Length: 372
Image 1 (cartoon, rainbow, N blue to C red):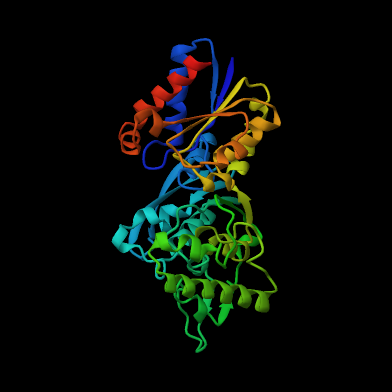
Image 2 (cartoon, rainbow, N blue to C red):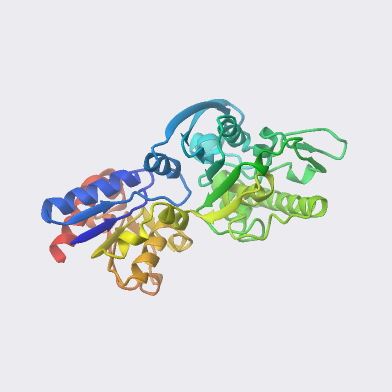
């Protein structure tokens, strides 16, 4: 029996690698002759760069950068010198995880530090940068990142400033750098959401509240996104608001297409292709995936959706091991021929599932093996 194990992380509990190892260990314990192949997965959110870095044998580098509130901090990224490829997570420099709940302020947090990480990779000789943009604290559409990369932003009086979510509407002039790194450096941006740049399904209204924004502040940021898109369109003939995922990471998805000449890709699909998982699924007897919470966002290009797509393509049975199942009535419509075990159901409560995640995951895998 050949089993492919390709889970996402259980956020706040277990890494994707830990989940894969636990599942594989229990299976080998009860089915010793099973052929288990593990692919810890990610979708462009936190943990993606580590997975790519380990897979390609990249070196982990530490760099002093400005955090989302411009305090200096150490941030890391991975660099594969032979491939001249860098794997960078914006959350390392500009992430929500870096701020306490009281510090979250989507009006003033910025992406300057992300630009510093990119600049460091370019100085080391990177010819391809894979930028993972989940988990942002920011709403500046990547303008502060661009400022760190020598773009200049001026107001109507010609005064230069570092933009943030509150001041996007004050940008009157954008001056590109004299030397544009991105004529020779390829940038691929991995997103884990499909939201547009602005509007009620856009970055500000959907994700602003978790970054500390009130309804009125969400409106300010949304106007800023519209202003920036209009300015770039009129001055450079470039649209930052047309691609799916432009609203990812507080508009960094859209901004990166202009400032970095980047290509936007759905993270889970891109990584599954990079790891060549499909050819293993084709000959598998079972495919196993999972994530911390199965809900409506899981349907927006997340790891479990990608693994479901691959399993369906080859008519393979799929097992999803999830921390909590909140999908409700959508479940049967979205995941045909799929078995789902919830750690919350196994534990009896969400709190217990979180506190005893490793034990509950082992019990869930054991229950599945016994029911085969």
